[in-house]
Image (cartoon, rainbow, N blue to C red):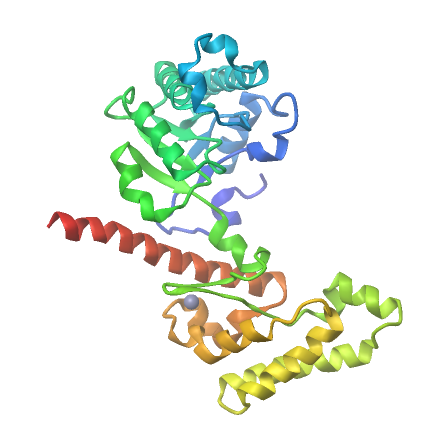
Length: 343
Ligand SMILES: [Zn+2]
């Protein structure tokens, strides 16, 4: 709010556009979204977003059978219909408000539904309100087959100039199928978050994923601090092991420490901060393969082995940006495949 989205994310003059969203999953359990359409539109405009999503309410269910149900809409649970209705109302208020205030960002209408036909109805109504960019919400837990069926039904009512966006969906092996139905964009935090939220798959490569090597900071690891306070672990010993792990990893990267030696010291520290798992096999694999040394991305070139060390927030996020780099390569690969087939 203070400096706007471009300065906050240090986008400068880079050719990058921004899309604002109101995080419908954070209030999915509430009866109504906690914001008004005007509040959200003001927020997008004041922050300087290029695109802004209308306020929506996620329907946490999918049941294609209702499209064929003999009782029609009567059979559909009231809560689902109410959420779709609320999403329409908010989309209408949002669109009118953005136009009235002459805001410069492009409004995106969010379609919520529980079946192919209910999504198609959403698309139809949003287009009637004036939207020409429509995002599909609630797709995350769906099977790809079901997503495609919903997109197919929606593409039948899509105006030629209307573009689709998928909220929270990457599945880049399906980009062509999505594209055929009018999808032009998608978003996902997955590549970034896996760098520090996933138990095993923290570092992407084109051939597969690797685990990051956990070397927690003694002063910032709650479990370790608890053990120290409880007298189970000596703080000095933990500090010494932490430093030795970092030093040995650096030496390993420089060819001055052996693989076995490095694994041993990592294991000694692991026993201190987490006795319940042994990640030695995963660490052996990543240390042997040295994926960071082959990666051309700026992060890996600059950080070397440090990109694979699971530690503070900044280092972990940098690994996330490496993952985004690899994800982009995967995506471009899938896009090219189609061109090769066509030519
Ligand atoms: Zn990299």
